[in-house]
Length: 381
Image 1 (cartoon, rainbow, N blue to C red):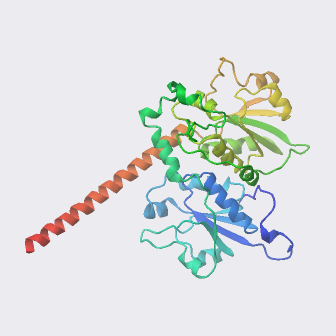
Image 2: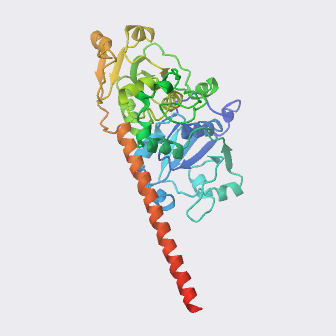
Image 3: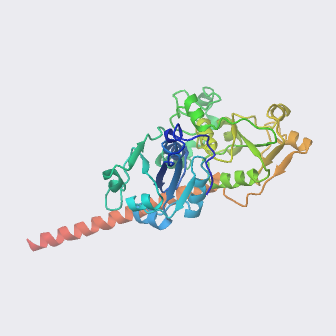
């Protein structure tokens, strides 16, 4: 169990210190964790004092929805890395019952304002709703697992791979990835409407304290995934009191060194994704690709870390880590994970295409049965 990295509690925390802490339950597949999931858990945590998140097994998900993209162990770790989560409950049942809430001593469960159904078409929260132990939170507009998969599938289309040549389109873009019609030319989707309030809700607001080791990491952190979590966890373990600052590159910069249609998520979405991670203390939105002396001095950085992935030279061919290397504060960190955004995208697309193929096969089989029954009926007459 990892204690919540977020400051403070919800309404239950104020003015009644002697009262029993309000324990909140959330559950789900959390197969492709994104900032929408994090926002749901943030809202749930604000409703009480202690948040337990139940994560379904691979077997349960396969039974009701089809095989998940990520293994249950990967999904457990992703959820545990979200800073509003106090504890995870591995192998939570797909249908939320009073027995489960009582087992974990939870007062109520929280879910988004969408309906989750079993394979039989029943509401998975029917029992807890009937007994008044159910609360609802708002879904995060502009993101869903289906939407993200759609963006990845667009990457396989040839006509989405020629952005560099479309100068008329590119000249209308700005540093925040907006195109002339409110769409991002990098993600190919409608612009996520970021607000200062949303950033405040996700940010810890904690300043570095005396004795903290200020560690700087930089990258795209696109489609924030288990590989990123493994890396940040390793970096977090490098110091007794780490204060990790993550520098996020603008969309154009990411597209320059990643190519194709990257990034999948725009700068605003990537900011929230990284801020939700318990290992990160601060985020630099639109960090320079080269880690400069000004950046190091401004944030009083004592250590700069990079994973084992390739470091692409800057536009002028120089090493973006030249300055921290000169100062002797650069360190490569082996997370032990070989997962990259590229590999994750390939895995997700493969899973989705297999899922669609299974559904088509199932539908064809059902259609064949219906046609056979129809022929038999006609023969009788």
